[in-house]
Image (cartoon, rainbow, N blue to C red; front, top):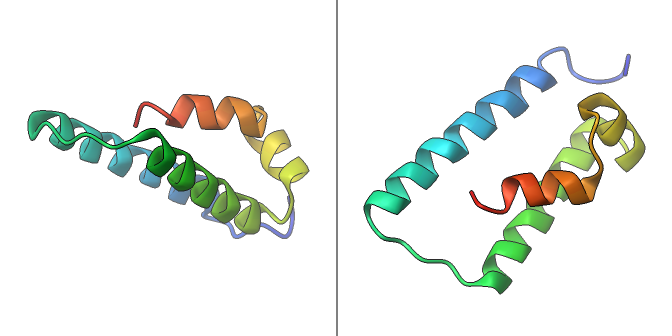
Length: 77
């Protein structure tokens, strides 16, 4: 955790908030996305988060959730 950028938690929180705002706007606009696209986006986000934390283990330890739990939490967005 010492090698993580000092603002990584703030950045992740900001990204989650932006995602929620985008979801709300998409719902208003009735935007639909198919499952393969959702899966691809979740994989892309997880890859980015893993890169930021340095490993899957560090990501899971820092956030207190498994990759699977994170994906399921983000899937509705």
